[in-house]
Image (cartoon, rainbow, N blue to C red; front, top):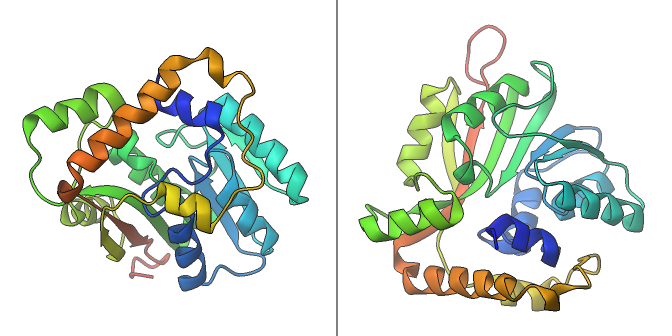
Length: 248
């Protein structure tokens, strides 16, 4: 079973590096405000988007997976919040230029054509707007066998280092770039489940009919654990230049 299909069937809302604990750190540190226009790219089942909406942000959330969006809509209804959900790709965002104060991404760009996606994030940000993108990072050069496994099994064409991400943002036109919450990769998913249980994780009822689902989950966990020292994660920050061309 495809990795994204597995997450959709399970209804997982915290599969990104750092888990929901990392999401809460980010939201607190960067001070999302009431009335801010926020785009979440690759919203999955909507846990982060709904949290921001509950804080009073004007949230638009995009995902390419129809089952993810269906479960995100159910979550929003259960939590009583308003989010504009839309189907779309990170590389082809369906919005006009200069639409959002902030673009938030959690482990999505690594699965996309990163150059095209970063250019789209920049395009839809307002002048002075902020990109916050938490991604899986390479601690250094990866063994070819591991790089091939990431590419062939999970669609990660290239796992970049933190510095490579910063250079990519600068090359695409961001005026300021930085990295925040830079950490080694540790198994956090089950700790996250205990510390931050998700009351609106809508798992499919027929999971027993899909033995390949559990095989996909097992293989991913084994891969991450076996090569844990080669992975890191962090939030890549980019600020769009002001209208006059100056950094934000």
